Image (cartoon, rainbow, N blue to C red; front, top):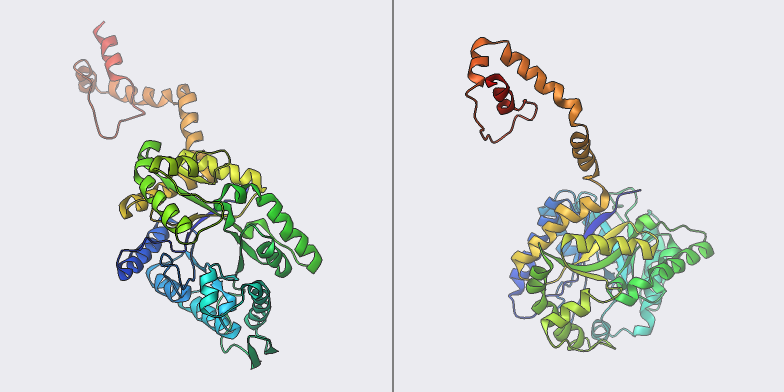
Length: 413
């Protein structure tokens, strides 16, 4: 089975109150940590209002992240295409691709916040159609075409990129919530998907149906979609025990839910949590939960369930948040890299088999001890000293050595 990739998605969702400069710097340090831990992808978004989401240009942020990292892929999660002239988007993505050494992923969406669209005077009813229109133009530019196009929101005259992407083909990904719009676009163009609605129980349970939307659209347009290019977003906070994870994340989770999702965005159907324990219970310990607040084993079980209900995806993306303090948050991502990733991908399976083989076939290796004993008994002084041998401890035990105390007892009798 192909290995599952892992990444992080930074909207960001930062509580209001901290110095923005320090938030940006901490976010960049977070990308560095992910790169060092071997995560495959990092995504950050574009927002212009709401207070909590304060990265306005993912391209600028990712260019800075590219200077601090070596191998991790860097995705725009996402550029809201109706907010920008398509030619400018294409140029900025190509520049990002070069500045990161060919590690850029072009992720796009229609725009998530109604307040952003209002600021720019954009009718929300036009946003998805404009995203579709822009994707078609941008992909043609990436392929080196010279494009002339006129729309009700942009004009291009003999437009061509001076520099084509560094990658032979820049990965293109569309964001998908619960509506079929994003999945349909992915199928239409045969490109990747990042499912953001999977953070909710309903979103998690609808993944199989969502994939059908993509496949149906691909059939209609003569393209193909691959589950290897499907990314699914989950939330987690991991610690050594469930109790510790609950203590570390409960209050921050409650604040994020009550102050941002309920108080600021006023998302339909949501009510405020009354306590940190209720926040944890209702987020991670209800049937069909799309979050893990607990141990690495809890996240392993969640991911296995996602693979089952979805039919299989290519990448698990963790939602980056401030539920816990910075130190505990860093440790959470560290624990996922150390224990969850290798367990899911079978990196330690061969080690366990090797250990079991040695335990179950001990008799085969007794001859090594016999060889050591033969050398001892072949030396008169060593044989005499054996009688005085006592138990000892060394940093690295001689596993092939015989039981010297047992052999000494034989000599005395």
